[in-house]
Length: 445
Image 1: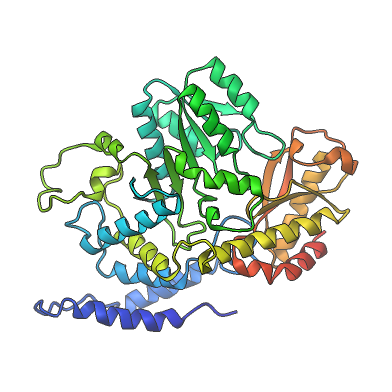
Image 2: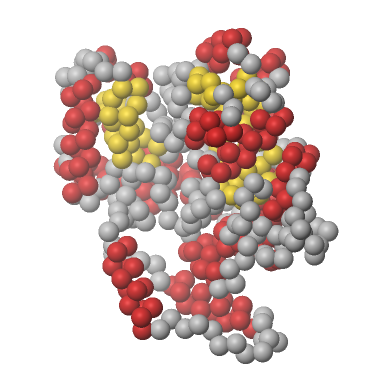
């Protein structure tokens, strides 16, 4: 196969245009990439061949999606200037582009007013959201489901916020009855609603969580790092679509453009519904903020130096593919979900497998049929290895045995968890490659 190269010609043209913007400066010879640098770069290319083909449709394992060519080229173009979006002095154009791009994301959730910025990824973005929550609800606990990302418990330890794990139902969603029990037992100040778990793509029941907020007064933080863009998609289950439609009512949101947003790593985003939380970031600096009365992104971020190139790439992508229901970007997400539903249907009809619950987004999980769940785990690991040798790259996950109908399949449950196969079908072209994926999976048993 061939890697995409057409963007290199456009990048050269864009670089010429960028260069002309500095024609008034006296000539300063640029540092060339000499023969030694060329040798190193070619060595890098050789070393990078030792990778799974994350960009290819036969990579259907972890949540790795190639950036859009315009994002990749815009990121590279910005690197020639290397702006720093901590302060306007360090990234004038890229800071404006970040504000515009973040505002478009906020509007996707119905927020015309907000406070927000880009971050290095979902972990740092979630840290900021929980840091603000801890400031507003001092001494109170943070609750999230057992299928929420492990980062929340880790962040709680970093911030000194006690973490409460809430049980999940058989579809990997937060169990509301257990949440109510925990609310009655301990002082919970923030509940994290996971809008697309990274293991199964399950979406917590946000309307019911919001109803409990009315009764108990906790903050609601939506960790939509994985699933946040799916509010634009028209082929969701009604219950899931309703949860996404209520996201504008939460207190804070995290979304990762470097997942479904077609961006290079790392690009996360944190948003707050109340712009007034900016007061919590207030600090003084003797040199960073002297040249402008306009708000600096560094004044509303725990991170200091931040890459302006990430903002430029995101702005360019959203300029080309606006965040609109029914638009080209949304249709790409819908195609991935169609592929996931089709794979789940094939697995459900095949006696060699035990299907997990139907995917809410674009993640499919399934077990390999065996006499016991222990044997099923062993077989799943063998299939994973054999599929990789045949060029199909899946993923393994360790999930509760209750997520699978083992009793109905005649599989004895002799372990609390099972190692299962997992596939993230987040590339639109997965829909066209599904027959090839299914054939290779069958040959791997």
